[in-house]
Structure formats: C-alpha cells, structure tokens
Amino acid sequence: MTPEEHFQAIVDAEDKIEPTDWMPEGYRKTLIRQIAQHAHSEVIGMQPESNWITRAPSLHRKAILIAKVQDEAGHGLYLYSAAETLGVNRDEMQELLHQGKHKYSSIFNYPSLSWADMGTIGWLVDGAAITNQVMLTRCSYGPYARAMVRICKEESFHQRQGYELLITLCQGSAEQKALAQDSLNRWWWPSLMMFGPHDSESPHTQQSMAWKIKRVTNDDLRQQFVDMTVPQAEYLGLDIPDPEIQWNPERGHYDFGEIDWDEFWRVVKGNGPMNRERVAHKVKAWESGAWVREAATAHAKKNKRARTAA
Amino acid sequence: MTYDVPVAPGESADIEESTQLNADAWPMWEVFVRARRGISHVHIGSLHAPDDVTALENARDVYTRRGEGVSVWVVPSTEVSAFEPDAAAEYVEANDKVYRLATHYDIPEEVGQM
Image (cartoon, rainbow over all chains, first blue to last red; front, side):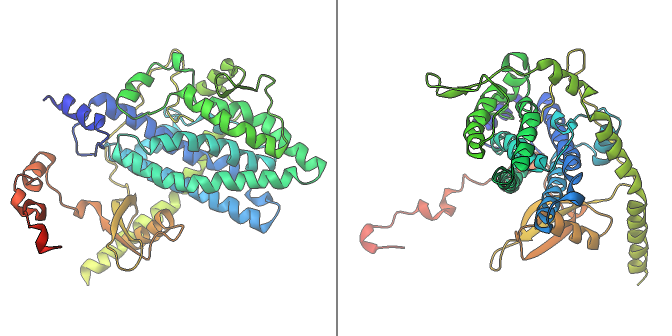
C-alpha cells in the first residue's frame, strides 16, 4: 500500500488524520488555507460586534455582547492552534492577514449600522456558520474537527441570543420592528453568500469531499440554511427581501432568488464596504498591543533568570 | 458558510505560508483540563504564552469559560516527548497477543459471571 492509499483508507474508514500522519501535500495546503481563513474570520468577526458594546441598550445586553465577542477571540485561538499542527507559524499567519495576503469570510466586510444588527448577526451569520461548522465537526483532520466541536457548542449561544434579541425588537414599538426589518434587508443576501459560489463554480469541492474536509456542498448547505430560516423569519413577522421565496412542495424545499454574484466577487476581491477598515483596524490593534507583548516577554525573562539564580 | 474563501478569477489558489520560526515568539503550551473531581486531566488544546503564570491565566480564559474544568495544567510543548510516527506502531501496537485479553478465555456458562 502506498502512503497515499494508506491515507485515503483512513479517511474512507471515517477515521481521523492526526498531525504526525503522512498526508498528501494538497491536503495539507487545503487545510492550512481553510483553517487560517477560518481563524482570521473569527478574529475579524469581533469588529462588527464590538462596535456596539459601548452602545448596548442595557447592562444585560452589554454583558452578553462582551461574552460573545470574547468567544469569537477564543474560536480564533482554537483555530490558530489547529493550523499550527500543520507546521505553520502563528505570527506569520497574522502577518499575512495584515498584508492582505490571507483572506477571511466576506460577511465581515459589511458594516453593523444599527443595534438590530447585533440580533441579525447572531441569527443569520452565526446561523449560517453553525450550518457549516456542524459539517466540519466530521472533517477528516482531527485537530480541526475537535476545534469545531468546541466552537459549535458556543455558537448555539450566539445564535439563540441573537434571535431572542430580535424577538424583543419585533414585539416592541413600530420603530423597533422597522429597525429589525431594515437589518434583515441588509444581511439576508450577504448571509446567503457566506456559503460560497454555486457547486458548478466551485472547482475544489470534489477534491475536498473526497478528502472529507468538506462533507456537504455549498448549494446543499445554502438550501439547508434557507429552509431553516424562512419559518424563523415568519415567526418574527419579518419579510425576507426576496420576492422569489416560496415553498416548493415538489422539491420539499424553499425556492429562492439568485444571489448578486457581481457583488459577491467584488467583496471577495477586496472591494466590499468595509474591507480596508477591517484590516486597518486589525493592524492598529496588533501594533498598539506591541508594548504589552514586549512587557510580558521581558517579565517572563526576568522571572526565569531569578528562578535560575535561586 | 464556507470558510474556504473562493478564489476570485485571476487570483492564485495558493496562499502564502511560512514555517519560519520567530525567535521572539511566545512558546507554546499544552493545556490539560480536569472536567470534574474523580477523573483525569485530559488534553484540551494548546496556546502561546510568555510564561507559566500567563499560560494558566490564558488557558482559563480560552478553554474554561463555561465551567469546563475544576483544574488546569499547562506544560511547555517542547517538554512533551513522543515516539517518532514510524516507531510508534512498533511500540504501541501489540494486538497480536490475543492471550492478553479477557475475551480470549472460554469459561463454561455454569461457572457464572467471571
């Protein structure tokens, strides 16, 4: 049996690949790319939400939002650790993100314009993330799959608090409900875009499926998300901004309209509403934290010397 | 959602990676958490920190935000010794010695539970 056949046999048997196992170079590269982008997404994803921490309408909501943003930081850390098991250097990953050479999910290149967005992001953006991440808990690479199990547990809190926030708004005044509707209007299509291009336009899907990095295709996940979300919007009494949304009894799924793929590619290529601000803010945060990192390093060195001398 | 950001037309699918070690980078620590009294510490993940105290504090914040543990250990990753992957099979796998297993022995039913 060649190493390649042995590797595929482990994958086909639904067993996990671990860091010290032999793996095809393409598998390693695909995972590094995907895990790094996922980690960066969690870290950049803190920005649209931390934007509202100081303006949360109550102490309770503020505490929830802080906890959620802290979770996103944690998710980034789990994922950077998973990427490191593949032999990449963490500081280097950061640096490449800062230089714009590494990407993150396009959804975070949209602005959070109102308090209702804190609900919609939890409901739709984290909802879409859960749809994808539940699949990833069964990914063939052990460290990635394990990180996903932890993340999924926490995402459930994220989605539920968001939906509950929207219930509160939708049962409130007419202005509050209008705020929620406006938020859904702005986030609906970008949320559908989170699942990526059509399967027919996604050339790497087949290989990723064979390696069991990806278990369900983009279009199937998107359909799953729409089917789950439409009744939730109905409960809120909000209208999904797509006139083509309709239950199709023959398919047993909701039909929905076509995504604006020009906008999709525009944002992927770096020209979304917030691409530059997000990266600039990340760089600024990294640079303003430099003195903390330096001080901690100096303190650790001093203590080590003292201990060695004692 | 896919975290595999699609490759835009005209862009390369390869992303840059480097395994270059940064001498100033904080060392890595392996984190072990005891979920509750009566069970062992179990490896839960890793993190970077300049020293053991900071590593413990970070481990608490990163891995036990929801009461996942009653005790945390951190160990410098460089202090963990392991078999080379090729040698591991030789040392770890001994499944051919079936006589080591309780199920290898036939005990008549009338003897009862043993």
